[in-house]
Amino acid sequence: MARALVTGSTSGLGLEFAWQLAGTGHDLVLVSRDQDRLAAVAEQIRDVHSVTVEVLPADLSDREELERVALRLTDPVDRVDLLVNNAGYGLRGGFLEVGVEDHEKQMDTLMRAVLVLSHAAARTMVQRRKGAILNVSSLAGYTTAGPYAASKSWVTVFTESLAMELKGTGVSATALLPGFVQTEFHERASMSMDGLPRITWLKAPYVVEQALKDTAKGNVLSIPSVKYRTAGEFSRIAPRPLVRAITSPDWYRRLQARSVQRSQRRASRRNLHAPWQREDET
Ligand SMILES: NC(=O)c1ccc[n+]([C@@H]2O[C@H](COP(=O)([O-])OP(=O)(O)OC[C@H]3O[C@@H](n4cnc5c(N)ncnc54)[C@H](OP(=O)(O)O)[C@@H]3O)[C@@H](O)[C@H]2O)c1
View 1 (cartoon, rainbow, N blue to C red):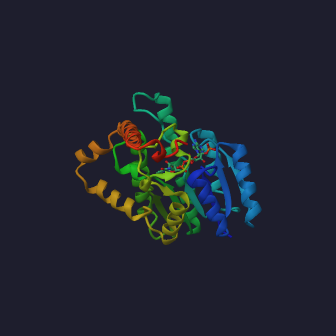
View 2: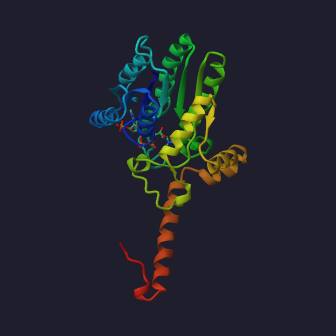
View 3: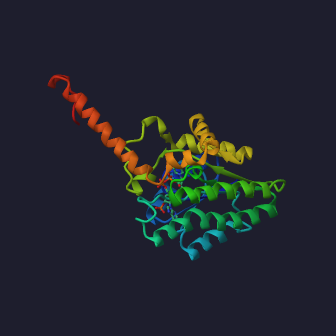
């Protein structure tokens, strides 16, 4: 039976990875900070699927705790066949509004942890000539939306380079580049996404299914949905001044402004109708 280690498995994409992998018979090692939530997820999965689920609570921005996870990846007996580097979060506010310690912590989680865990996993997997690494990046990495985007750009380039280095070893590396996905990501960063059209959102089960298919095929990049593959191509080949103009770090402020305009338009449309024609305000 194969075993997968998934970081950030208490919610969103990581939780979905855990369920889908358990559903296809993978034993699991689940890594996140919230111990109670991890234990609850593990119990729920064990109740439904006949797989073993280990929990390994760790804050991946902490060097010692990260080292424990790296050690687990090099275990020669209870080996890990698939590493999913998924844990991550956003920070609300521009570069100067956020303290530099918070930026550093975020970079340690988004980049350093991916580097260290990929290194530990790849070395062990290459010895066995078998294994796969799936790094959750983001389409934001093709944009200029602040340190988060820069970190995700690093994850994509790093994974592409690792995939080339691993060619012929029996081990693969895949970067997942999702667009907007309905998870706890934006709520945790206190970002209201009301101004975003509904069509832009993807659902976690779909994104994870596509990512696992691409990983099984050994594809280097996984970009779920035609709309986001098109957006990805556009942002890759578009002139950089245009990309900068559209995705500059104040994109969130513009999104909020659009949201306010929309609700004002909706309110004025309501006022054109007689009271009995108005929609309920609930
Ligand atoms: N949602 C989107 O629109 C979107 C788009 C593109 C890419 N992504 C990427 O997808 C990945 C998963 O995010 P999500 O959308 O599923 O968000 P989410 O629902 O907020 O889940 C994030 C997970 O990461 C864990 N985590 C955060 N910081 C951690 C740390 N320092 N150490 C260990 N675990 C940590 C959280 O668990 P604990 O709090 O228990 O630690 C949680 O399980 C991230 O890398 C994100 O950048 C998301």
